[in-house]
Amino acid sequence: MLAMRTLLVMLVLGVTTGPLYAAELFKCISPSGDVLITSDRNEGKAPGCKQLTITPNVVSSPPPAGKAASSPTPGDFPKVAPQVQQQRDSDRKKILETELINEERNLQVAKRELAEQENTRLGSERNYQRVLDRLEPYQKKVKLHEDNIANLKKELGNIR
Image (cartoon, rainbow, N blue to C red; front, side, top):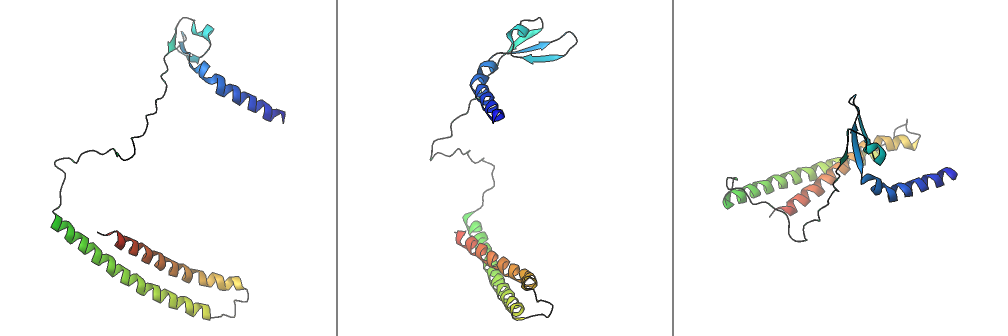
């Protein structure tokens, strides 16, 4: 309890008086070349010491809402003709639709395999945890295909 109070007092003193000490720092170089940084004024008056100038960190405010900081597009930036971009988007949509059909087919196969495994009971699985362990890869496969279908549908929704 005493240690906690002492720590709390030291923390409060450090926070409140820290900036006062940090305002004056001295860099002293001894004749042997050792460097000493101190906040003690008496040590700072010794020969070979000079006061350090400390500038506070300035945090700039964020740009006002609605005005995004954007740079203009360089003149030599490659541009795509609208017809070419439309063709690319069309191709992309066809590819995604094909992938969606394949994933839906794979999901049906994975669900069928899971159902077969759920209906199968092995003599070595008297402990139900063994059944769960055997079914886990099939359940993960179904979940994977469901997630892929959801992502493909989302991507198809984003196409212009």
